[in-house]
Length: 576
Image (cartoon, rainbow, N blue to C red; front, top):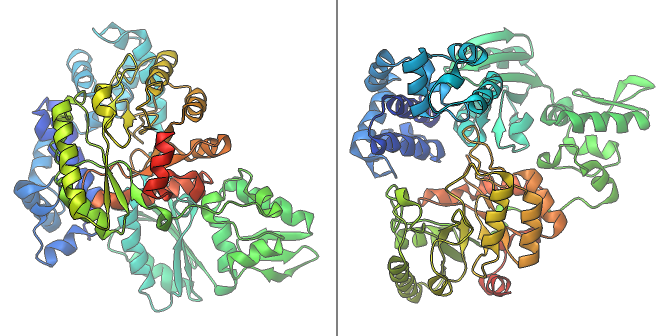
């Protein structure tokens, strides 16, 4: 079976979870988590890199030891260390850490005091009111655990970035069949949602049986749930469920519209069709007076045209006003990656020990990607684990940026910092050093559990500082790991407009913060955003594409995005 980057990342994450439950050294745990992150976001399969003789130890956060372990996984599909840990610790205990408020220390305590090892154990003890009796828990935490168990029972969705390499391999495999003319992934994946559940794949072919047989023979398939003449459902080794539908040429566009969704968008289209005495389904558009007569369906454009609409891109198909806008000719001219001139959130080896690329290396990576500018935003001192920059360190970095700018003629480095917003709303560095920067990216990394009133007031006080420019990852969420902070985002966004501040769309796939709904809200009130990679390595600069996808789902156009501007234009905006 093929071993995908996501498979190796999952093994490393499982090891990190089990080491965490053992109370092992936090640096060792972080090494596995960072390696998993690197692998999950790597654009090339590590199996290809090994075959081509490349040294995996050169990858960020890998090194010789983990490179050797990756090779073992590629050869055997597993790792002895993981098997040893699973013999020592019930792997089901790691699932408990998915419950909000249950970190490794609390899981260990529940295991030691109540014998909790599984979600079923946890639910039974919580329903019996026993968790509140454990030191450090209480009634409120017990209720939060019960609420979290309900959420955990729902099917867990994949980060789209994690699903992509698995999807790419499967699509390449299907496309290689002689009877397949075209393959497209539909559903939420095609709408570029931040997470995906089951995958819907459409293949264009006139020989459904042959394509289905080819599909179920894919070496990554571990279970065939159903198999027919034109469709099949399988489960891949990764855990993803995939539904394949084989569609003839004349219906392919209609099927793409239907299976791309969303459900609400499709309902609105069907209602519009009825008003025109038409019927629209996955097979085409038909005259209701003669249902044997297919009017359209070969292309998506033909389906929309028959309904008196221009083509609506998949990202907008959520029934959030896109059909009315299409009818009025007011669909947005959506942002594209080509419109971005630079990145406004970048880290280097000057802070955070897991970073592997220097100021010069990050500059060269930005220049290689055709960027016009790159903002250097290492951490401030409050993020102790990241070894943030002191005032003296920051001034030394500013001098280094000036010196490097003297050498560069096709890239401009901007002097900035990701400065922490302290609990009282002050910024983590004095104004006399912040005054000398081009702008400041400001962020909350601590005291995430404040009440909505206190957390909102904290950020509003920070915005009163004239050096506050961009609020980074505004809600603090990590998808599938941690929910957003309690915040009144409407107040914060309105205050940003009043104060001449901005919000970030953080393009890290596990953040994508702010989300698409908040992007749309920002647009509606005239608040510009920065699409930022929050780059921790050279390859992270490529993550901007996920931020662009999020912005497109939020109806953002180039003029809504800060880093579509030239640096002189940005400088004027920041100065105002």
